[in-house]
Amino acid sequence: MEYRTHTNLCSPAGLCYLAYMEKRPKTYLDWAATSWPKPDSVYEAVNNYARSIGIDHNRGHFREAMDAEVWFNRARRALAKLMNAPAPERIVFFSGATEALNTAIQGTLAEGDHVIYSSFEHNAVARPLRFLEKKRGIQLTQIPGSVAEPIDPAAVRKAIRKNTRMVVLNHISNVFGSVLPVCEVGNMLAEYDDILFVVDGAQSLGSHPVDVRAMHADVFTFPGHKSLLGPPGTGGFYLREGLEEVVSPIKFGGTGVKSAMEIVVEELPHKYEVGTQNSWGIAGLAAGAEYVLERGVADISAQLAQLTNQLVEGLKGNPLMRLYAPPPKIHHGVVSFNFSNMPSEDAAALLDRSYNLKLRAGLHCAPDAHQCTGTLRQGTVRASVGCLTTTAEVEYLIRALQEMGEDYVEAT
Image (cartoon, rainbow, N blue to C red; front, side):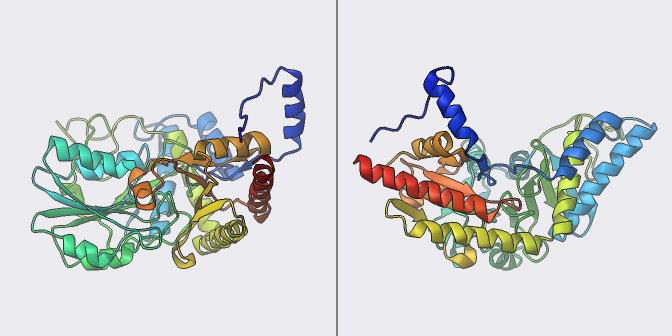
């Protein structure tokens, strides 16, 4: 069966299509990529900051510069509370989780170091590791897993060598929604003084309980634009006390403070926050994190569990669907599937053009995860939900896929 995904919108057929689509609600189910829509408080914070302050913090001794610092402090306090960090100053801002992960990885590892990571890591982890494998001669051990059991803590312990310097794990798989046992791994790694535990919290902070002290995380990275509901171009990491002497910055420049220092300001957060910061974005991130705190992470997590289960149960009865779903106890926010033998990109495009549904398709920047499930060639269609997703939106996707199935059977 051939599916047409492009229409000339100026043609009569195109005009009919536009009239048809007006009756279809725009339904966004790609929260694992970025959150949308944002709470009104986020839009208001960015707008008010841009209009009334407009400048970066640490860039003046006038009133607006002091007001800018207030917003940065608000963001640090909210984030520290969300992850149970011991102090707000341990929160460092970057352009996103990718830059934070690169700083933790490239700023720490040296020739001969050994790193353990899982087969479910995002390219923000896998690519810098493989780059350093070629450029610095670091050694890598990838722990294999499955959707149902993405990593076995016992396998991590077995892989440890005398030169093991770091273990890197994502908290929740961005492809399958599998929750990794980071607390169990962290408790085990607490026995080893020389191994840094880096946790990629891209899919967890803001939508799932996070306690950096309970998981013994040395570094916990996060994006601002996903479940924290902030704007793109925001994010950062939590850095355990004392590690600023271990993790070198990978960027150098002005900080607005202690400008006479020849190389770098040693104190947090200035050691890593160099150059003009995304201050408008940080204001929005502060508002987003405060919204999450007010709603309560436990409430948001329960909502996502309910929506995830609703979608899985709704798709189970579709004979043309192949689900890649972990057990409910470790399944959070993301549902990956394929529709018959259709390429995932075609299925997602058809959902958009015919139903105004916005889903992600492809490899989701995590090809190793697809190796585990045999979906490297086809990829998967990924639906992901957030704190503003409704049960009606999930039901709409279920009905759309049922209709697609009926059309497919009729055509074939």
